[in-house]
Length: 204
Image 1 (cartoon, rainbow, N blue to C red):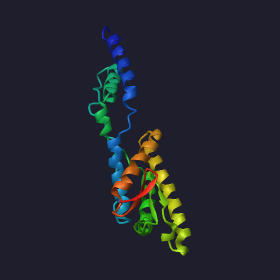
Image 2 (cartoon, one colour):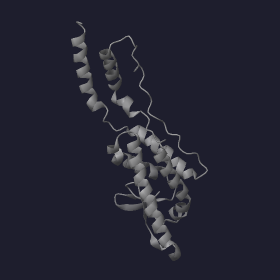
Image 3 (cartoon, rainbow, N blue to C red):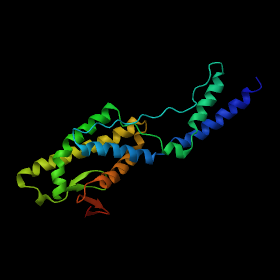
Image 4 (cartoon, helix red, strand yellow):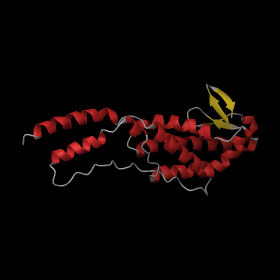
């Protein structure tokens, strides 16, 4: 009985400390997830869907049955109190049905967009979207089609960023996910692709 009070105090301290640890956005994991998704999309319909990686289970989180409920709670708190560096390297889940469905839609449309990227008619925006850069590079009969493709692409991309954040239990990460994808779309784009930088169009 004499150990109960110290354990309660320890639990309170650990839980208080955990509040700020778990809010860090895992930038490295987000970049890895973005690369997997973008690679899948650029490979085309025959490419495999992203396998994703579900959140790894914390090690040492199992407490022996004979221990008290309080000790089990302390063990759980200790697992939650992980270093920021470890949190940054955790994997993001991109394997949910919702994410897979959006990636499939983007993959199917990518083949149609490639020619317009190559001609410079469309380009990548700084916020992770696609926009018409040079309408004159699009044959008149195809302009309505391209406008529709761009609108559908941007709608899917917005949904993708939101769903990845939601799939990992942090809807508030949507803006960070979008910013990460925006950079990776450009980094992985083919040579010659146009992209926005500082409000101006540049060619890769």
